[in-house]
Image: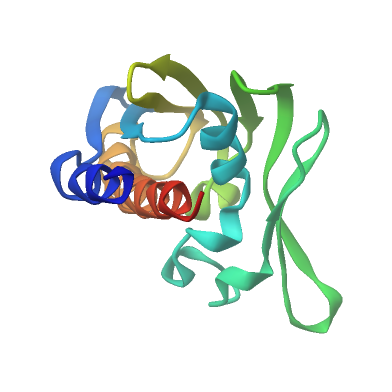
Length: 174
């Protein structure tokens, strides 16, 4: 019966997403998903970035080169050929089972004079948890925040949907 409920959740609960605000200097996007796992497992699934992030949104083209070290100062990093790498974001706050706060510029924002904050919060619900991902970026960039927000929203929506599928499959295994 649990497997049927989880499979129904996969079909019935797509990610909710919104560009919360944007102007010439920055933007805020928010995504949320309902997961059939408790908050601690939802955050643990988020930390397994190489299990759900798309290779199409990496520098190396290989999602297996991604890692996220859940500790203050920990790196969301990607290994590149020849010993190089990319620091996508850095863990600023980690409260096990509750929230992760990361700082940095995702994707092309790395090359701009911007800074970003991604707050990932897991909220207990009757059926498991709700994971809310809020990303804000601001500063000086060649494209304005309104234009950047649309692209970031599309990419994050895809990734959060992939996370929802991954975390829900994990619930079936247990």
